[in-house]
Each structure stands twice: as C-alpha cells, then as structure tokens.
Length: 81
Image (cartoon, rainbow, N blue to C red; front, top):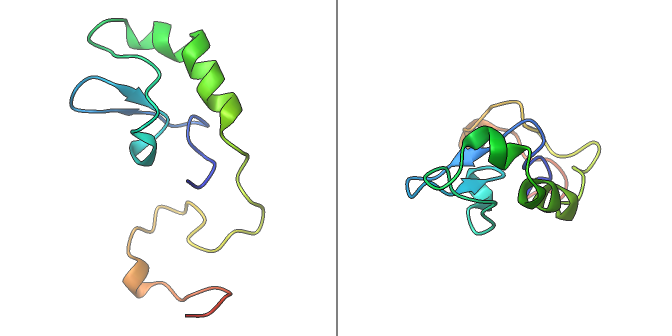
C-alpha cells in the first residue's frame, strides 16, 4: 500500500465495511451497516488502523497520488523496467 490509507481518504465497500482505501479492503475498521460513518471515523478501530499504516515514502514514484490512474501512459521511475 502507498501509505496514504486513512490519511484524507476512506472507502466503504459493497458489504458496508469501512477501509482505509480501496486497496486496504482486507483491513476493515467497522461496518456502516452497524454503526454511523462519523462514529467509525472517530473511533478507536479507525485510529488503530491509521497508526499501523507506515507514512508514505518521500519522493515516491510518480504519479505519487496525482490521481493519474493510467500506468501504461506514465513514464517509469527508477528502477527502470
């Protein structure tokens, strides 16, 4: 994972699970069908999840969360492939 899960983002999965982002679906922090979203985001499980995710790497490869989801059109960064 990129390290940005729970840092300004969250994902509610089809089953109602709250995850740090769509790529962190294996680490739910509650379920919106059972608790209000605001309670989950302010809860202990969310804080524990956020604490377990390492901070993002500095000077990471682009797109570095630029929103560019087209890797085929993005130039590779080191190490080159």
